[in-house]
Picture: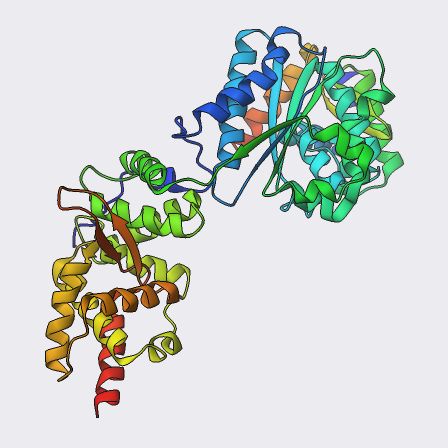
Amino acid sequence: MPEYRSVFRDETKLDITYVPNRLPHRDREFRLLMEFFSFILQFPGKMAQRVIITGDVGTGKTVLSQHFGADITHEANKFGINLRYVHVNCREYRGSLFLILHHAVSVFHPTFPRRGYSAEELLRILLQILDEENAYVILALDEFESLVEREGSEAVYKLTRLQEIRPNKPQRLSLVFILRSLRVIEQLDASTRSTLQSNIISLEKYSKRHLIDILNDRVALAFKPLAVPDDTISLVAELAFSEGGNARFGIELLWRAGKYADAENLDAVAPECVRKAVSSIIPTMRKSDLASLSFHEKLLLLGIARLFKESHKAYVSLVEAEQAYAIVCEEFGAEPHSHTQLWKHLQTLSAVGIVEAEVSSVGSGGRSTLIYLARIPILELEKELSALLVKEGA
Amino acid sequence: MNVEDVFSSRLRIKILKILVQLGELNVSEIARRLGVNYNMTRGHLKVLEDEGILQHKVFGRIHLYRFNEHSLKAKSIRNVIEVWEQNP
């Protein structure tokens, strides 16, 4: 029986639900969040907090909130405070306040019935439970947009003003609103808006460097030593950066690339595995894109594809691409274009999204252009281009 | 009530089994699982509660029943059912 090899050590560390112990490049935001809620530990019941976390897809909103939730719950336990962090994805609950609150109640009473009362009654029930158990809840409403879309201001108003129906009682329900853009807040009426907008944590898009750090952390947890070369991490980071600095995309890509490596029985995750993986996620190579390229753009791209095929590298320099292009020109009996023209061709290829070009200032020889073949398996690209060029040349 | 009277009912034993399994449950759900009506379920729950075996909490219109944590009878019954279920 053949021995099963895998590049993974523990692939669950790449799962979307995994919350890592360390959040690279989110220290400041994490501290801020802890700061906003620090009074809960000092003066429980005196005040409830509301915080908005906003940022694009994959900027770490969910993981930041969950990491904070785990930490503050742990801290509260040390103080003898019964604090629960309840994370709800509003979209999963179809944006329904009733279902969201039911989830919160079911943390305390898992078999609580789903029928026979309204969202308002459920909110009162939640508070009754918290009073009886002397507990506090931080309710994180992830994909908050969904709740606003379905229920409008009313639901948010109920959540934020609930203390008014129970004056002089401990304030037990704090809220974290997690959303992509603050635009959704504008849909709320003025009085509801005013109850929300006090504390906002905006997560900036991750840079490529940030993404490399995040991916390195996950690689150390999820893969066997030396199974993921730096080149591969750099390529994944580049792709995740081009997807709007989306760390989640990068982590998923890493997992898929690992699966491709395992399927081919490789010892390490080569950049080509990443290209295959990315083309399985987003079908980026459209034949019409390739067909619409000029003759010399195709020649340049074929040269680049062959370079990648031979070198197994994650990126090549423009100088190397130029040399490979010259050979392809010879093969197809064409006069090579000048360096400046080639640079323009490269810009076109980059604009179409077939390659990604990045100016690098690494090394002593000044700036050089690095070319990434982002999302397309090389063999497929070479085959398609050769067929097109032969047809054009004939 | 005598022990033979409490355990003379098949439905009461079923209720206890359900609560060992699920921890706590509302009346309608217990009735649904037993396949009998609400009032009959309520009657049996009352017997078990009066004996101190069960307790319930009220949340609005919802009544959630569970074993009485402080009752020795409840502990022993739970134990018997658990042992029984694990060694069929």
